[in-house]
Image (cartoon, rainbow, N blue to C red; front, side, top):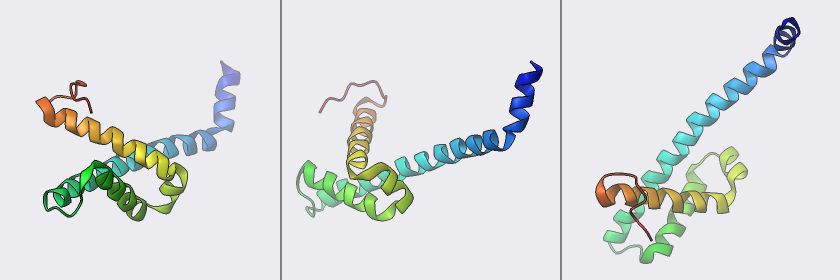
Length: 109
């Protein structure tokens, strides 16, 4: 037990840095999801106004918009393909919530 406390004490700065990085990542991830939802809603509004046609064009618009507005550190880490997968996943989750007011996988594409 004494050895463990000694190791923790010696590595306290590294452990603190890892914890801070994890907390920061959680907040950034929620920020990314929030921006993605805002872009999805904007794309749906543009589709209603007949500016964007079809789901693929809306998806492309959302991905392009996210690539522009997200910080470069996030876009370099995630990449366009992962952002596209995130947009698809969040779209299905949003449509599932709109479907019956619950997230229960009742919406199928």
